[in-house]
Structures are given as structure tokens and as C-alpha cells.
Image (cartoon, rainbow, N blue to C red; front, side):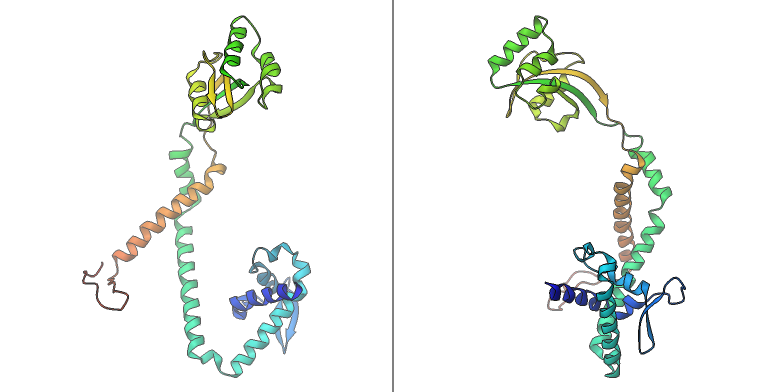
Length: 283
């Protein structure tokens, strides 16, 4: 298991490349040297960066526990790079092609991240919130109590007792088979879609303080329902809405910006075998 773990660390660090892992500011006095290889310095920040690039399951191990293994791997990585350069691998066409691919991916990612940062600003988020989420009326909620029984006949008998003056909460504590019985049948506040349709339809149709005229059947049994209160759920605040708004603005920007980039380019699509599709070039 230990060998597998160390191999996973090695594979992760090699996959990102020594240059990527070691590209840190070595002038920071608060960033001490933790290893030296023939005069080449490996700093604390290099090890921290390597740790951050590990898969999530390996980062469950504390940084201090992995510190020695990470240093050893960074030392090995550097030695392999030096050995590879002595073989002129940095001028190898396969290596150059991979570097170009990596460079292209980093440029694309960085470009998009910076463009998104320019557009999805705090001002834009607040503006969208105030225009939509913040001013939207929340869904209607009902607070209801119920008495759950197994047959319609039991439900009708309970309705008769209520009509004769029995206390709803007391009957719920004595007769309800549901888990809310001990607290008088209180279900708290809920939205229309939070309950089974027959139950919701009945509860939302009743006035505050009213008891349903008939028992309502669901997959759980028969319910005698009383509506205690109704209200509008308050709209989500800015903190609760932020992630949704950021996602919305990001998706809208990416769609629009990609269309803009394509509109300003001459694009021609070919078949899988490289032959023309016969369609006109895309502007």
C-alpha cells in the first residue's frame, strides 16, 4: 500500500512537470530552502504547490506527513530533468510538441479565466441579484398539522370528534400513527412541491385555521389536515444566491464570447477523412 501511495505521488508530480511545480518566487525570505540538488534550490513553496496538485484522496493525509516524500520526489524530478537535458530531450520534437500542447491549454484556460473575471464582477452579481433574485417573491408556504390514520372510516370519525369540539393537537397525540403525532401533528412550513400532491392540494386550498372537510388519501394512509398558517418564503439573500448568479453570468458570457470569436474568424469544417464537407465556410 505504501509503495502504491508513493507511486501515485510520483505520477502526479511528473504529470505536471518539474518546471510547473518549481516555478515559484525564490527571493521570499519567508520561503526557506528545503532541499538543494547540485546547487539547485527547492523551496518550501515548491513542496506546498506539489501537495496542492495531488488528487483529493491523497490530500486527506496532512501536509506535514507527506512533506518528506514530496521533497524526495521533487529532488528525483529535478535529477530526471537534468539527465534528460543532457540527452538534448528539450530539443526533441515529441517533447516540443507536448510543450506546445501544454502551453496552448494553459493560454486557453488563463485567457478564459481572465475574461470571466473581467465580466463576472461583484457589481454584475449585485446588479443581477437586485433585478431578479432579490426582488422575486418567494414561493407560498403552508404550516399544517395532520392526523394520520390507516382507514377512511377512522378519518371520518376523527372529523366528527373535531366537529364536536375535540382539540386537534390532543387527538393527533392520541390517534395519529405518523411521526408527528407526539408533537400534535405539526408538520411545520412546507412548499407545495414538498408533499404528495393530494396532501398539498388539500392543504393549500384551505384557509388559515380550517380543517379539511374530508380525509385525504396518500401512500402513507388517510390524513385529516388542519392549516395553521400561510406565508411567502422570503427570497434568497445575496450570499445564498451568489453561486447561482456567478454560474449564470459565466455561462452567458462564455456562450456570447465564443460566438463573438467565431464570428470574427474564417472557419471551414472538413469530413473525418479530410475531404471538404461541401458546405460554405463559417464566418
